[in-house]
Amino acid sequence: MRHEVRFSGFGGQGIILSAVILGRAAAMYDNKFAVQTQVYGPEARGGASMSAVIIDDDPILFPKVITPDIFVIMSQEGFEKYGSEAPADAVMLVDSGLVHSRPGCRCIEVPATREAKQTLGREIVANIVMLGALVASTHVVGETAIEKAILDSVPKGTESLNLKAMTRGFELISKGE
Image (cartoon, helix red, strand yellow):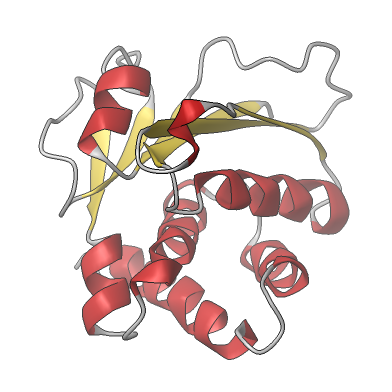
């Protein structure tokens, strides 16, 4: 099954890293094909940034996301620039503490930044909380695949914190918090 996933937020939130991790999980650990793209530019620190991943069971012939069916939005500006025109049949995960608009599609509110700060003590892992929530709510890749990809991708010495963040994202969805 094909999924087109668009991540958006502000520069410095780990938007591009999130897409890289998701693509790695699909291609290396879930026996799928994946292509990841990103927007570099003045958005790099502070402005809206975007990254996208295509995941498919079959080879991907065109690497650009045309009609995302899954959105992960971590800032209001990111929503306005990259998520406000989401199709009605899409799924959108929003960081409920930072995104105040709601789309016309299925919306899953995830307090990722709040949980990263208050529960884990490090705001920097909010993107990993969101990845956990993404996988738990959409099953776009398996939980074992995302765990392995996170461990491959995060700085040495932060593995435990990042796994706790991923698990917190799983919990937020499974417990409906």
